[in-house]
Amino acid sequence: MDTLRGMNEALKYIEDHLDSHIDLKEVAKKAYSSEYHFKRLFSLLTGITISEYIRRRKLTEAALDLKNPHEKVIDIAVKYGYQSPDAFSRAFQKFHGVTPTLARNPEQSLKAYPRMSFQLTIQGGNEMNYRVVEKEPFKIVGVKYEVEMVNEILSPTYENMIMAIDETKMKELESVSNQESYGIVHASVNYVENNEGKTTFDQYIGAFTTKEEAGQYATLEVPSLLWAIFEVEGDWEQIEEHWMRIYTEWLPSSSYELIEGPEILANKHSKNEVWIPVRKV
Image 1: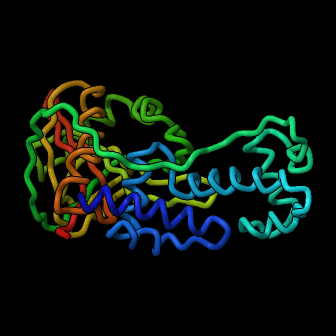
Image 2 (image 1 turned 180 degrees about the horizontal axis):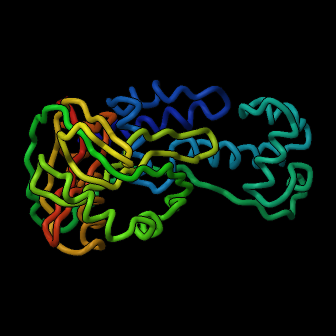
């Protein structure tokens, strides 16, 4: 499978360049994909960002180098991309729990983050109902949140986002929906990953609409895109499980890749659809 082989080639490239600058565009090329697709797929498959993975691997190797008494801390810091011994020391202590100097003690316990590899696992065999459709531009009008995600933990949480919208606003948002046969939609967009493993994105909770007047609500303008749209039945737990299957089972085995754009859950009662923006590869 090209996706599986490509992901492992990307990991090999990272291992070969831990002691130099790692260009994520080049890493993505090894995986036969765009940078956006690679970064999103990696984080969804592993539960951490690619930047955090690289950081952990570098600090693991740095700890091994520190066992050599002939290597200076400043040289090891520069080797793994840190601009100063202080910056290296802070990152090292945060990961290992001790300073680089203490790590030189042969009896000092340190953390190790082993190299990853991707393997094909045959699971389930459950059917997935989907269609691939090109949609004209549309809008999502609703409440907007700026969300931070570290190690898959969200701030604010989805529960807090939903609870902050009272029933009156929810009904008002449902009433502006005039484009699709759904009530409330959830859209995540503008994913940005930093070098510390933190991801930020915008979360909209609102409705599809073509109406011009947004009133007190934020508006997300969605351009014309190709969408893979999956039908999902059940409660929130089943939706999350199905959503993960889309990324871990359908996407790696399909002839499509993720492109930058909103990832949407549209739901009304027990009928749900997951929308992801894709392109043919």
